[in-house]
Structures are given as C-alpha cells and as structure tokens.
Image (cartoon, rainbow, N blue to C red; front, side, top):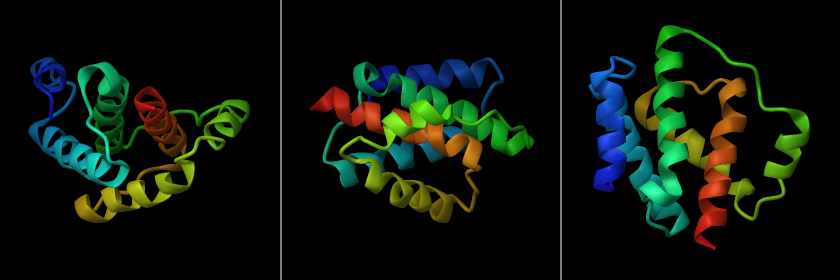
Length: 121
C-alpha cells in the first residue's frame, strides 16, 4: 500500500474513527484488488476507495447503515467495464474477513472500484 494511503488510514486511526483490524482488512483488500484488476492503488487513484472502505467497515462494526446509492447513479456504475467483477471482489472481502457487506454499502464500494478502474484507463 502506498505510504500516503497508509498515512490517511493512520489519521483515521488516531482520530478514533477506525481500528487496527480495519487497516489490516483494507491493506489486504487493496492487494486483492490490485491483483484481480492488474493495477496499482495509490493516493491519487485510490484515496476515495480507501477512505470509504475504512468508514464503511467502521459502520458495519457498529451496526450502522447508510442510505443506498441512488438508482440513477447505480445505473451508471453498472455500465463500467469492470462492474461484472465487483460482486466477486466484494465476495472475496466478505469470505476472507468473515464480514457481510450490506446492500446499502455495496453500491458505494462498486462506485469507488469502478472509478478506480476508470482513473487507470
């Protein structure tokens, strides 16, 4: 993981927003993403994904939910070249770390994953 992204996560840790477990999950999940999508996640292309993932995992741990992504925006996300790979990536996250990603978070994670791919292409 890029040092700037790690610094971003450590700021969230220092602020008490996330814990060490979340940092470890994000580190390993970014490795899965990089391997599966053949790209490198950096501060420039992955800051929104990493920040959202950190806060989403914190919400999940607390049992908090957010409103799902707007249907129109979700429709746009589904047109991404990598959208078909998103469910598999999220399933790997769920299986590896024994967590369940709520449907309300799925759309936002999909949005950030698809944007990550768009930035790199």
